[in-house]
Length: 604
Image 1 (cartoon, rainbow, N blue to C red):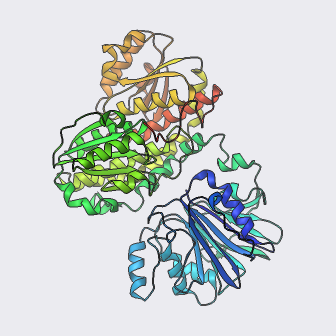
Image 2 (image 1 turned 180 degrees about the vertical axis):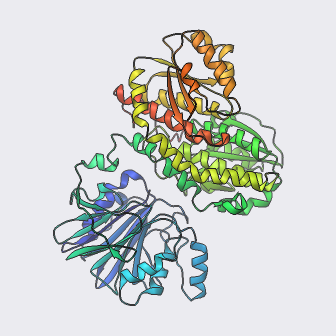
Image 3 (image 1 turned 90 degrees about the vertical axis):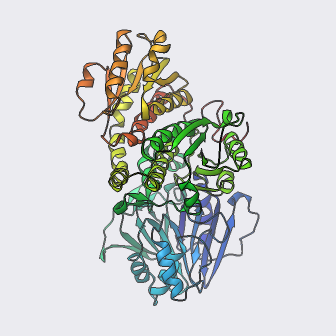
């Protein structure tokens, strides 16, 4: 996600914050900026990479600075939308990670009061709110402004009207304070400050801190907080990975947050509906659609396959899923009532883009689901939805898959409520989406059990993954992940297809991972497991919590919490991601960069 670095002390601030930003480059970003105070402010914002900039900043002096790397969410990738953002007078400067859910309402009110906005971002409303309440004391103005904000934030603020300090605040977005001698830093990630200081304070949600050269104070609900200083014992690479051994594990651990980020500000609980701003301009066209093509490659293709089940079951729309690399060579039968959805993490997948352009040539409505603001897909589709999953570093896609599933679930409600989906059904799905992040965290809490199962099965070189209905594509995803990172042969298939060929390969040397939550096809999956056991095959079952009978037939069981059948893939994929990771770890593979593979496939 976006990165924040700030400094206040006795040294020149700019070299310190720029060095911190460079250490955040692994996270990915599309623009950056900084503001240095020395009497008057020096503000700089730029699109692209810090390393690509040849400007000389030796003349920029000052002991207070804030800086930011931006991964665009609200607003396109432009210099105006880069951080820091300022108030009308350019006296207050803000860097922000997070989402201001009520920014449109706040912006309209502020414009009515005479404020002039220069960007499309949600962040700029924070600067103007602080300006509104500022009367000489920066932290008091920040406190008042935050009372009006609904959403998430990691925030650093400076002002020419109250210099020599940085005011920082946190709500559901990581922020730490680096403690030095007569100096303090603020950062969204330990890697940004670890070469400068290893002494840190972790801010908690709802806390506001005031950093000055002479010291700091931290408040929560007007009361001063006493915080412990901790010592970072990671090296730089570990810090970038949040203390995890690999980016893949870090990204799996972020999957609950991925669901939260995808749904934040988009669910209308009281109406059992969702709002997807990126589809507003084609809303009426979508009402007339009765056939949807869902196109993606690799993991994105499996997300499309889950989405097809969702859309047909709940939105009453005929769906057809295809692989981008195959679809471009077909001649699909389409008409004015057809729309095509293209799913890609990067928005630059060559085959998916080619298929999208072919559909545009035919005059078909094109929609995009992607993670990267300003990507080719985002620019060229008629409309779309961002998954907001943040940068994904590991080649094997994990949290992006979860973000795609969450987005497809919301799209299903959106289209379903346009048609015959009842308010009651919509409320049930939307309410369960809200609950999913906590259920996902429950699964991650049992990762040691999954690690032990991987250790038990590390000697096997062939695996089958089976599932039915919503979890058939998840079986394909589980097999793909195991192949990608552990180099162990794995195949995914529909449970009912075992007897049509794969059973010939099942024996005591070929374990089967069976995804069998307590859903509409549970009994069918039990029959498939019995077919495997009859051939002496070992079975690892993925089952719903509370199902004790499964232990009578499976060799090992991994449990997931109960949820709606259409949402089970968002939970069942998580243990499969963990299993693939731990298998690769125990086998000593290069997990983040598997051989022969690239993160984004930008050529055919």
